Every structure is written in structure tokens, then in C-alpha cells.
Image (cartoon, rainbow, N blue to C red; front, side):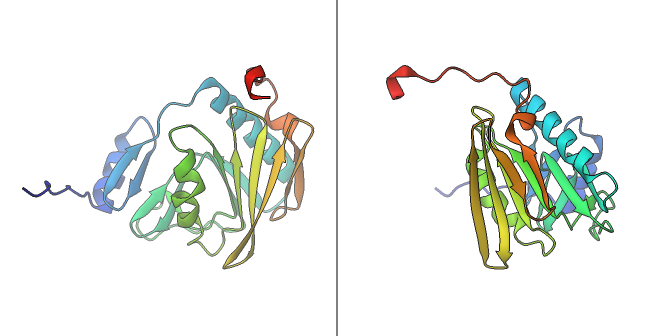
Length: 195
């Protein structure tokens, strides 16, 4: 007995659903995924990071946005936690609500999405010529990973750990203290059995 066929939705059906949805939706090759509610840690880190970036970008041609729809390919639309676009916004031909030229993307890692954020989602962003930097922020400990584009086939990973670290974003030529991103976030004490 064969498997039942999977019903795939069109991009047009996705946009119709997204327009009436209470939460942002992502579209991956005909399948739709709803963005789940953020945990308090996730929401606090998102707010801190967005504020820190926005204030440093004042007066520049770049701007910050949360939950902006990004067209990565004709069959994939994603909604990162924070997007930075510099210069003119380039919209997708399919929707005036989707951009195609993020310079930097920030994802705050959740247990349910961390693997996809590190792998498949990163590969989707890499399809975009304007994309230069990818920032992954842990919410269970003060740890930030920054992937910086050196060439179309080479990315450099820099890891920052601890609240004393200062995160360098090469594509924007700016730095943000980890303590600013994690302000007000309480972490569980380390497990003494693991030390």
C-alpha cells in the first residue's frame, strides 16, 4: 500500500492565508507552517536585539524589522525574528509584502527550530545575493553565533559566549555587547553534575 499524496498549496493560497492569519506563516514548497508564540525569554531577547540594532542604525540607509516576510526562492517564504535591509527595499514579484534583499538576518533559537535555523533555513537565506550575515542567538545561555559571508561559497563562523562578549557585525560595521542583548534575561544556574 502506498502513502497518501500530500496536498500542496500554491503560493497564492499561502498569501491568502497569511493575510488573514493572526500569526505569521512560513511557506516551504507547498506546506505552510505557523510561527508559534514566543517564550518570555525569546520575546525579551528579540526586543533587546531589535532595539540595540535599531538605535545603532539611526541615520544610516539600513533599517530593522521584526517578522518581515522574506522570499528566499519561488517556493519558500520565511519570517525571521529580525531582518535588516539596507538601501532600497526590493519586493518579490509575487507579493508586495515580501522582500528579497535582507542584508542581515537574526534568528533566536528555540528547541523546536534550532536545527532548521542552523541548516535548512540558513541555506535558503544563502540563495539571496544581498544576504551577508546570519546571527543565531541562544535563549538558554548567553551564546551568539555569527556567520559572515566572505564569498558566495565561503562563510566564516564566529562564536561569542558569556555576557562579557561583544558581538561584531561586519556587514554593518558595528558592535553590540552581549549584556545588552540579554538584559533582563535570567538563566538557570549551571548543573553541578556537568562541571
